[in-house]
Amino acid sequence: MTEISMKAAGIDTGKIWLDVATYPVSDKQKVPNNADGWQTLADWLERQGIGRVGIEASGGYERDVIAYLHQRGFEVVLLQPRQVRAFGLYKLRRAKNDQLGAALIAECAARSDARCHAPDSRLIAFGEWLLFIEQIEADIACLKTRRERFTDRRILEEIDRSTGELKSRCKAQLALLQAAVREHDDLARKLDLIESIDGIGIRTALTLVILMPELGRVDREEIAALTGVAPYDDQSGKREGERHIAGGRARVRRPLFNAALPASQRWNETLVELYDRLTAKGKSHKAALIACVRKLIIFANTVVKRQTPWTKSAPQQNSSA
Image (cartoon, rainbow, N blue to C red; front, side, top):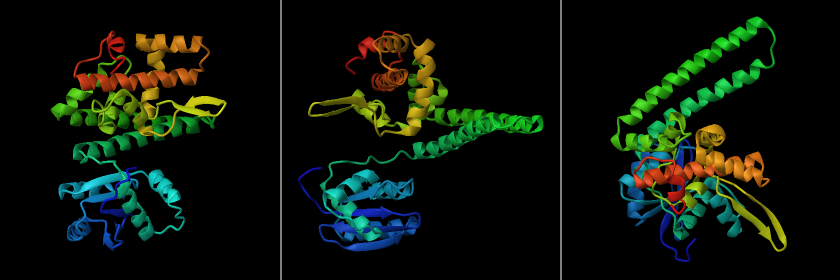
């Protein structure tokens, strides 16, 4: 947070309505969360002399209005719910409704130094496609778990048939998504760079291209934090707690963990050496695997930043990247 306040608006986002409030003068507005409502909102904000707009992440309902506000030239601050809650606690505000939420978001945005880059419409569409694939994968996992409960041959055959159909659908959708991504030269180049890393396959590479647009634009510490694999200290006074990870993007971590496990055992010599070294020092399997995931995302960040494919000598060269 900065000490400087400026005039801003806050939007409490719902599926159907957008509740809006301004700061420091608390003017209020309520508009539908659709194209007509966005235009009405933008016109009203311009009349109010608002240049910065804060909006709370709300499961995707905020994406279209953010894109429209960027198009109209507004500076948008995207806030996470926990940021707004923490700011409300700091301000000792316990009451909660949509209008009060909008006013709190407006004040938080006015004092924040965060920024929200204009979203890439291509990645939004690809992200929904990837989510569909993830849901198919979740259905497959559920069927496999369900299968363990039965012994009846007829039921097992029915579950196996459904599982096979879902696997075929998942494979087909993944191929179609890859082809669609490769129609864009910049995304195809990024995909090839990430896939050049030993241990990262096309499924993980697609996830990183689509869900981590920051790759190549931030440093190694920030990319690890965005992924949720940066270690945080847990120390107070004489107590020295174990370092732990927190936050980040779960949809990115899952395929990275799936890639890091075999890579740290066989496919990536650098990760094999790292895993063996950490476990020899007494680190648990989980802690060593998290370190390997952190290395993988740092490798991906480095190859995209440098625009050169990964090589086995890259980790030593990338130690300061």
